[in-house]
Length: 110
Length: 274
Image (cartoon, rainbow over all chains, first blue to last red; front, side, top):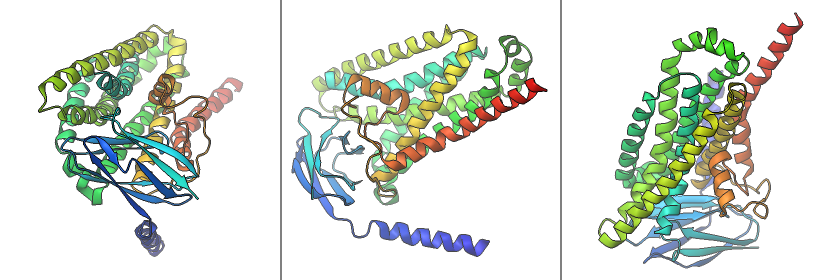
């Protein structure tokens, strides 16, 4: 029984390690409560890694109802957010702490 | 200021709802309310600590600390709600007289456990939501004008949230004993199941689970941006585009309570037939 469990754990570990190895990566920066770029095109039906770098000294929350994501990014810090696989379409996102200015959109294309 | 009102209301609503439901339960089971002071104290202190160490938490575990911590807090709350529901469930099948006498005496022995569950549920919910409020307000630390405006907004938002909580409390506290426990169980089960979808969301965000194609898209029916959407989100974890794995977490949370319920019904039928 025990070797089986060990083996299963090993397989799981390899799986977790490899699962995010070859993921396309995109970077978004926050400056003066604005997203750069404010529009990002990513491939459809693929898992994508977003790196959000907050260049402001104040915290921001990356939030999107459409992408089903929310993450606080402290001032001067960097955050990694995995999204997708997504079907083609437009997915708006915004900064919850500065919703008036911090607006952006992820366009998913085939 | 309006931004602050909405943000704080969104954060406070869920914690206020949970607190009100458990206070109403305390009322119905003739337990005292002292636990709520401890829960609020722990929740506020904990949320401040989470905000204070936000950088370290976010950097921990290869940048997945925030999500893993949130998932753990959600997990503890859900587990406590499920255990609480399993305790309350038998009471829903006993008559009002029973609750007042024998059942209540039995419950008296488990009071400590109930208080412990109440404190965990409320303080952990408050910690997670409260930390976001502290972090949000910290942005205005060096701007006095913006800070006072944000603080007024926060006070208004918190006030609205607590008023809604008070309404929920009175609705439940004045409910007839016969209906109270079934309705309470239904509401907390849906609430816990809704929270479990948040765990899935946290794990998808760090790439540990895959999102997959949404089970459905009901955004045309109830938009998550709308007031109804926000309210449903706080109540039952409404998600207009849930991923399959979120649905799985939802069912997994409901399962133990549903099984216990069916078992009770089956036992009731057996005993009445004997």
